[in-house]
Each structure stands twice: as structure tokens, then as C-alpha cells.
Amino acid sequence: MKRSDAFELICPKCGNRLIKRGNSLYCGENHCYDVAKTGYVNFVLGGKKESGDAKELIEARERVMKKGYYRALYDFVKGEFSFGAGDVVVDAGTGDGSFAGKLKEFFPSAAVAGTDLSKYAISRAAKKYPDVFFAVANNRRLPFADSSLKALFGVFTTAFPEEAARVIAKGGFLVKITPGKNHLLGLKRALYENVRLNEEDESVPAGFTREKTIRLRGVYHAVGEEIKDLAGMTPYSVKSPRNSLERLYAMETLDTETEFRTDVFRKE
Image (cartoon, rainbow, N blue to C red; front, side, top):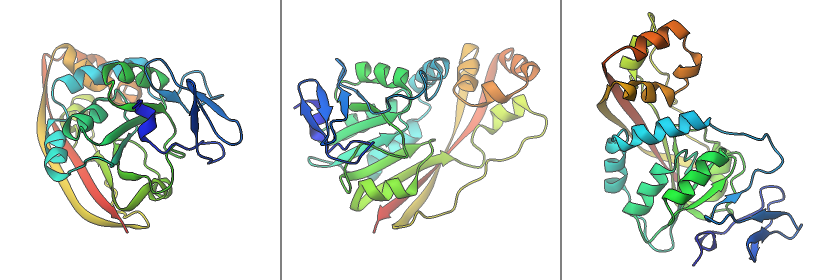
């Protein structure tokens, strides 16, 4: 079975079901989306030439992930959920695809997909994780049929509650991972004189019930160029003053808190 064949896909433009003919997906309105050689599909056509995160950010994130940045999050997901044959699990805003790759590793019988606005990130991810279906797609309009997902994960990405409610089946899960109050506090202190804690979202999306909120805390240790990679995968590398970044990059080591706030919601 081809990777895309395991999913009920719809056209983001008109909402009609997509049918595969040859190496392309067509809807009843004859909108067409080509399947790349590596298996991913670009559902965002006619937009800007480059969308989503920059190449440098994606590559920095890949290197940081290899160091175990998400280790506590992976342990939680592996112990908390049990997805099997017939379950469809999507990582929205997948970036370098490492989280989607872990989902497939933990739940090999499930159909796993990763979406992102960055064509560069998706094309790289599709080569690295051949058992995962990847798509260039907008979180506002995901290419999945109504009530077709068992779970939708959003890790440090903008989630749209109405769209999540549309694609997740009754009894399925919306798992939202956001920065906790103290996330990367050490990094921010190295950059700024006055540091504000991260704000947390306490809202419950309409149509969902909060099952639990877990804070996964740890310490990330970076040495030398790893410090630049850590900053480089965050908005701080763009928003911070040049002198602050130069001071940070001159540091030999950096220890900073990590705090992943994980909210698990169940579709009513």
C-alpha cells in the first residue's frame, strides 16, 4: 500500500474526496495534486515560493532533535497512547518530521502522517521517514476527511480548534504541546536583561473535554555550536539584538530549562 492510500484525503480547495490516478490526486472539481517521487504531496499551490520555517531553522532543529531534545515528550507519548491498525495519527506542523517518525516507530500498525507549510522541510522528512505520509499543508485546512483521525498532535505549532474538531473522530484525541512557563528560561536569560515567563493557554477547544495536562520538565545541555543551533531553531535568533546573539554564541556551554506543557483533549 502506498503511503497516501492509507488516508481519506480531501481537496483543501473544495472539500471533495481525492482519488489517485497515476501519480496524481484528483477531486470531482478536477483540482490536481501531484505525488512526489518520495511520496509526499503539496496541497499548498499558487502561494509564496517559500512558506513555513526557513531552511536554516529546519536544519538547526534536526541537529537539536538528534541530541534528545524531545526525549521526555517521546517517553510520555509512548506510555500514554496505544494506536494500532485502522488508526490514523497526524502530526500537524511537523517541521523536520522527527516527531512523526517517532509516532510511526512507536505505533507501526497505525497510519501516520506529518504536515507542514515548508516544502523544504517536508521534502527532507519524506526521504528520512519513508513509512510516514508527508504533506505540504496549512493547519487551517488539513487534507483529511471529516472524522477520519484517531489523534492529531500539534507540537509548538498553531492549532485551529474548529479544524481539529472537523478531522478528529468521536472519542479521538487532540494533543497540544506548547511551551511551559519556564521553557528555555536559561536561553532567554542569556539573551535578555529582563525576562518574561511564557504565557500558557488554559482554554478547552469547543467539542472537546480535557483529559489531562502534564508538564514535562528537564534540562538541555548545549556546548559550542549546539548553542547556536538551539537558538537557531527558535524565533529568538531573528528577534534578538545582534549584540545579545553574539554574547550567546560566545558562550562555551549553556544549560537551560525545558518545559513541555502537554494538554490531552478527547473529542466528545
